[in-house]
Image (cartoon, rainbow, N blue to C red):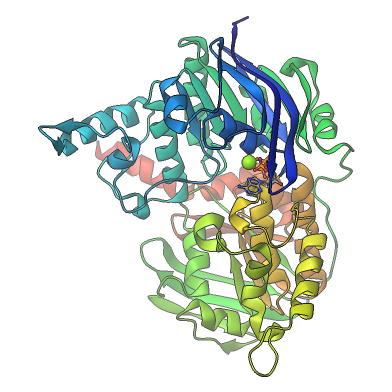
Length: 508
Ligand SMILES: Nc1ncnc2c1ncn2[C@@H]1O[C@H](COP(=O)(O)OP(=O)(O)OP(=O)(O)O)[C@@H](O)[C@H]1O
Ligand SMILES: [Mg+2]
């Protein structure tokens, strides 16, 4: 067993008087992957930010490689060999992949940025990680999954000895996750790195975790070898109770057809897509990352231009060229990248929830009715069990999972007919996932048509009434969930990809 390379003792941290870390002791050995688990808001990211110099602590001490340190700055942490992959993407989107990888450690030659040298080294790093990406590509043009890979490449490029990964796989494809796990094993077994791995995808842990530390409400309540705990032990440690039903399903006869997309094409990623949605129906859109599902939601919502096709609501065509057209028609979208598209991170939770609802909250003269607003916000916070000290807190300072709940909350207060969710449970803990499913069920019971994109196959099969499968920008399959199996969905989700690979092989 490796020696301890990080030892934290009695760490305390409060934000505006609210104690979020309480006397936390935590350690990490060389040559191990330690899974740090806990519900949304348990304090995982905060503890890791203290270790990487982002936050200062109120009490307690930290030792790295046996030496005690006061508060670290991010630079000192980096020099000690600590690298962190943050939960939320932290890239400069207007810069290139290489410029992001070398941010703050740019290669300078003759007083000038050595761009070609940085591109060369970045290409090497990307190659080592089997990431297929041009080093000079601009980050803004990349998908969320590719951006997440850039974050990973950036952290690994520093030759860190201690690697903190805060939800690194939340937007990766199965293949990318496999590659990443290969890299993690190599770093652990050959390079003797210590790795802290935070994830809400508990099924991943079996393939990499050596040890588990569980946090609950700001305290570290248990550390044990992974093999000693069962999955249900871990879940009950995390949430303090057992979950009865992972996928609560409610039955409702579907009503009349309310929504229809006809031959919709948009850009390169949405090709001739048609489907229908009925009142009180919950439809899941499955597919692999890059299948065009997010682009489809963007085209419907009027973020991206439609090249051709129609959208019908209750049989009548609606013209959506901007999101406001969609919102006014009663079609709303909870997007995938909450930090960038879903929230105003510098506004309070109250303001975020109220923002799309101002029309109902305003009095005649355009003044917000504070009582109504507070009622609405309190109700949303309660319904979704959003963990916060006060709704006046900046949305950006909530834990990742709780930010996601706010994105969902602001639309739930609306009087909508069609609600579209793009990866609604990304980064959400097991118990809160069930809350989000219950919410979708509630919308469905109220006669709303619910459409959700998800890369988690068990989730799609578990709660959707009907499943639409996309591949390469097209709809390739459709199943009633009673008839769906994982392999049937996968077959449709890879249809064009398989064809392309065969063509490529034939051409070679
Ligand atoms: N900058 C901040 N200002 C105020 N409160 C904060 C700040 N950062 C974190 N918090 C609060 O600290 C608590 C712990 O948050 P943290 O992000 O560490 O949770 P987490 O375990 O990482 O959750 P998740 O799984 O959702 O990412 C939360 O209640 C959060 O709102
Ligand atoms: Mg977190």
